[in-house]
Image (tube, rainbow, N blue to C red; front, side):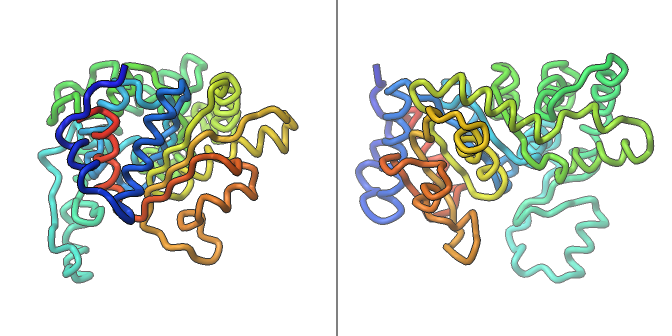
Length: 325
């Protein structure tokens, strides 16, 4: 039974009537219809959504079973935990558009890595995690075990070794919510994240074996098996941003149908993308949903939505609607 909508949802329905605002409402209602019909939902996270503190709403989406698998970049995987353990050391730079190269160099010298208007503190965030995650990597290697990047992060969170550093309410960490549920996840291109770079440095120093980390190909086979087992009532695709976080998982359908020749594989049953990328030559992030029909990802009748706006504004509003806020 659907709960009565709250004040935020009522405001959205009353005022968001045209253009991208109306697309937001349509997409939210389409997402809700998928869940009501028993379909599962994949959410992909690109950009710096964890640093934007999406966890304040996304964690409750996870706890409320409003999604069933995540595809995210390595940056989003780690930056939610960095915010958890180093929030007070972050520095906001509201005038970031006015910074000179010299200003940027000054931030580097202070160990502040800038993401638009927010600087992540290297020592308190990156290095604090590094000390603990290395031990988990090394222990797995000694035991002859191999795990995916997100599984190591789940182990890190659930071990309790970071508790002394917590600086935000734990309920606002979407990674902790995911770890508690052991939520399925794929992290394509993890190697380009800070933790991925750190892992590679240990491999180059001979302190870890590359094989201790399960690979992107293994992520694709893991996703293919998950999709096959869970697509009976359909699986929707809710994409925040573009890039590899979206492109990697959506390709699982044509891989199953065309490469494995499993003809009865269902298409994605819903598709929505929040993006401010404009359509251009060869741009995946700016491609309209109909282009995905030609690649065997979406069907002619798949409900398709595109909201051309800032995901840091749109995603929390859609999540609020789905949570009946």
